[in-house]
Image: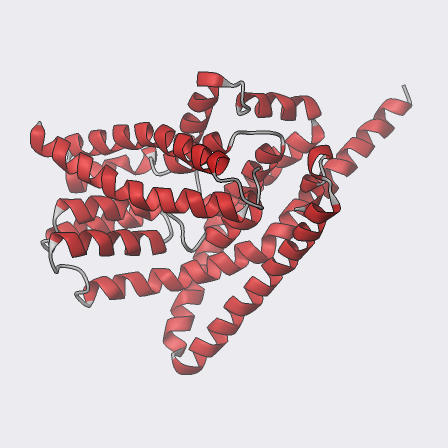
Length: 147
Length: 191
């Protein structure tokens, strides 16, 4: 009976150490990524307002994919930005690709993903997500026009 | 994370060395980003102060999610049985249940993706399939609480269509990621 609390205490101790160690390892990467993300939040709207987008559907789509991939933050921001882009006359395909790549591709979070899940996994996953954003955007627009 | 990579199947000195390098890499990465802030701040103080305001807001928004993730990992570390169960739901024999857990988990997960990496790494070390981890990450693009805003900007049919396609594509994406990883094995994880 007296052994039970001691063994439980040991279990708690081990779990604490393991979990704290995990978070300590992640801490610098997490802080670095958050600092980079904070910079990107400032840069992206400026790029859009400087008219980098709006130069033909193909160029817009590729640029939207790159900008969406390099962006980070809550998807709600991408909906607002994409909505404003569409209002400004950008076609639905680049707008959709922008929304999709915003969350599915993470260039800023790549170091954190790579440290935790491995570089190979992170690079393959993000490259595929980048390509699939184009396809998903295209299929969405085609489906909308068909129905 | 060395503690997690020193599981029986991954405890070779090579892996441990790599891990040690990785942990230093994290601190170097932070140092470089801070240096970048100082460098840019030297030329543009307004930009850096606005970025730091965003950083402050991000840290505040991420902290509760990290606390939640910390508790989940702590509970997982506490209970080997629970770890085995979750790993079972995402291992090679998990079948359709594993895919459902990955896609639904991704849809229902909240907060920035960084907060979920430690938990995903934990599951990966427990034997979770890369396909299911990739599916989880892809399905995270569906954010139920924000869908009304998407409807407001783009309409109901657009929102429904995009949501359904992302859910389907998350499975395809996960399957493709795993296929490529297995067809072109490299030196990194997972092998």
